Amino acid sequence: MKFLNKYIIGVALATISLSACKKDFLDRQPQTGIGSENFFNNEQDLKLYVSNLYDFPGVGIFNNDGATDNAATTGFAEMKTMMIGTPSPSTINDGWDWAQLRRVNYFLVNFKKAPLSSETLNHYEGIARFFRARFYVEKVKRYSDVPWYSEPINTNDDELLMKGRDPRAFIVDKIMEDFAFAAEHVKEASESGAVNRWIVKGYQANFALYEGTTRRYRKELELSNTAEKYLQLARDVSSEIMKSGKYSVYTTGKPAEDYSNLFIQADLKGNPEVMLAVYNESGLRNSGWNETVFGNYEVSPAKDLLQDYLMKDGSYYTSQAGYQTFSFVKEFENRDPRLSQTYAAPGFNLINTDTYSQGGGIYVQQLGKRFTGYHQVKSFINDKSNTVMESVDVPVLRYAEILLNYAEAKAELGELTQGDLDISINLLRSRVGMVHMPLTPMIDPVQLAKYPGLSSPQLSALLEIRRERRIELALEGYRFDDLMRWNAGNLLEKEQEGIYFSGLGKHDLTGDGVPDLILLSKSQSIPAVKEKNSLGKDLLYYRVGLVGVEDAGVYLKSETGGTVQTSADNGTFIAPKYYYRPIPQGQVQLNPNLKQIFNW
Image (cartoon, rainbow, N blue to C red; front, top):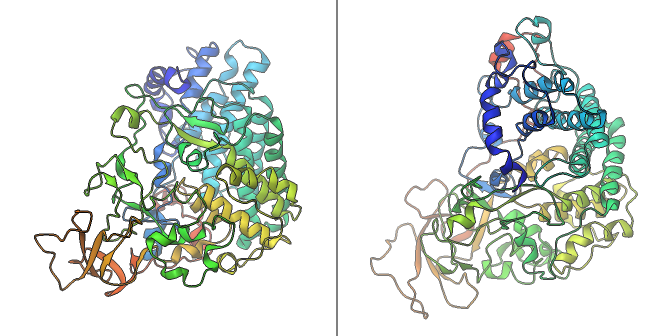
């Protein structure tokens, strides 16, 4: 039985007992329910408690690139709302939740009551401190300076309840202390789905890279002189994981399938690339997966991401004359195989049709207002069985990310070698049959325009490593954090575009040379009896209009053709203000010592 499933019933019971621990400490509620006098008596108690700290994401990660330059979304996205509105501490209320920290700190002041060996106690302390580090990582990303608490807050702790923000540098030092302790003391081996030493190191490397690049590129923090030590830590910890031999890039020798298969497996246990997964099992712990990752529901992949994929021979797609007006079919010709394992390409055979009104068979793009026309197949379960869908496991931490961290840190430090690329980036390329990345590629002006502030002496390599990260981790929820740490929030201002149509009339979207749909002027009516193509299938009809035209079926750049449009204006990214969030106004009123920063 998978680890998280073994303890799901126990965790549910613990959750009831721990209900009082879940109160925000600012509410000043008394600590009741579970008591140290009748708990923390043995290892089973400790294991049960820490299992309640597990808060890793599930299938929702595959929609989390929405509202970045990777994907459009019709749903709510905080930054999207901020950029087109007038945000204030009164309107931004999410994120100031401290329940997880209280749970962790309550454990840390009570767990040593269990009569266990120092090695065992250190292991559980390491697990708790790992989760505290993860908690504060998210707070630092969102607020930068936040109060540091290493103990649970009680109702009479007025001084602690009313403390102000601690500086980012201090908080990050504490985070790194927690990671370091956990990396030393958490056991190497664990049950499937449980945190072990290598998982701790993976998250430690991830945050070290995040903080190092954030300090280097976000000048308003005035911490750039300390960036290098975090980049060195990211390099060293990633290297340690790589040298351990514990993990490898998943491949079965099928470059057209292996990448996509990572995200649709019912059992990732034993997969050499998956360092941590959320394991699911139909009828016991359902994945929560549904068909909307493919259909026109909220999120749709963007043209900007598609254009970053290389040609199969390693050349730049954007170096081709006229690439901006390539047809949908031509966009997929001779590309990095990861493109057609991420986007539904011409010829894709659709089986799971619940959110796709045209039905099954060879896929023809379903267009819609405010959608790009592209559809996501990465993580899409192309199977009608509910049991299959409910059982899919979610890879939360992949070895691929460690390889990308290593290469980026080395390039940021100006010490990347061809050997480094061959043990990192080029392993990922080999999986899909792509040519290897050279140490000194030609500078792609399109990439350089995206990231004009790079300071590495290995500029061309770093640009390509950033591209590789975007491609390998596409639509897994990493893009927003990457743009934030690279000081590239301005890229969110670009409206996400979709498929290019040369004009009104008939278009082939399956690559067989036979028209599949017809675009009409918004002044025309869709006929009751549809014209059939030479295959005997009804053409799909769409009326074209500009963004905001309510009676149009699809929005294009102009009323006679162009790229599919998803929004009229993405708004403005105000730097450095929008790299941070304000503390909710209600919390500031409760505690005037919490001062707003960065113009909030």
